[in-house]
Length: 478
Image (cartoon, rainbow, N blue to C red):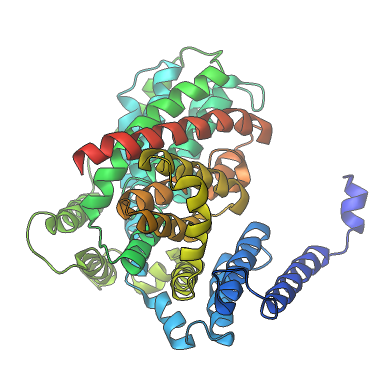
């Protein structure tokens, strides 16, 4: 498209397309209310499925923002008598959002103190001047930070560090394989690291909450992390090797790169008082979250700790930031999305839609081994993120189906829910699939096709590794 064509393009054309999509979705849902349902599914079940598909379309096209789409689900459920409005809105205040909320605040405390940068530089300083080792060091730092804070914020932190290394190495944007490999690796590591803990990405607590709502099973912080961390540990070196295989590094050593990193660390000086306080905060948070795995505590301890930490972080004098500042860090749209997603899961269950879908899938999956079925669920979810372009939206859509399928055949619902939840983060194919990808893409060091080439191999490897772990190895432990 030429510059003149861009100038002549009507200003509101994009918004017009979004409005048309929204109207079409609403019309289709309205038509579904008058259609005879298929055998085995009630009238409200068909309507609920149409609402779910409509929400998926809105997530894919961004005709409505993700938060408003969550409200859209709750609104339609109340209009068609699927769930009362009060029940739907109550999901916005679901305890799972306490975990999502505190994740934003912990990230803010880490960034404000400067501890995030110190930690990143420290890890990189231990890796030497070889470019392959530098990439691994940056990936480890990115993945570790992403376990505790926003994947997007983590990527944004790593971009200037990586840019400095590339500049020192003389790597040219779009021409250097080192540049492509480094920034694609950062995006991959951010998505992988987010899988590791319930606070890593909203898709994780969504899966935990849906498992509780649909199967009555409550996972602790350690329950999730113990199942997710092995995947993180395996995927980081897998991504590291895949990206370098696809883009062989033309620069083997960054002369002075290690010295530059150490110089930045030296300029930061010893740990400052605020950094020490943040370290204590994180150690306290992890300790509290792990306690219910060793001693008897309330079943919702994960959420109780999240609320406690939120209060501490914004308490005057003893906290880490005033509430006015904290509000700017919170992704309110994600909180609405989580509420709408949980409401959708409840609606699918209440109308029998999940059982109906599971029944359809049973014809092809019921006779296969549980381990293979988990692999297929992982594959479907991992490919689903490419379409939905939303980790939370993908988890909201696929986790209920995975749980329903497991319950139908007497399989382990935990294994299926965790597999689908983790696979929601397999956003490796396109820059538009997840915010970390877009931030890394904004560096200008790689094109969409560059990520696609590495992403195809990465998705396949992730599905295979996840299938082996969830279907064969983890059942031997849990």
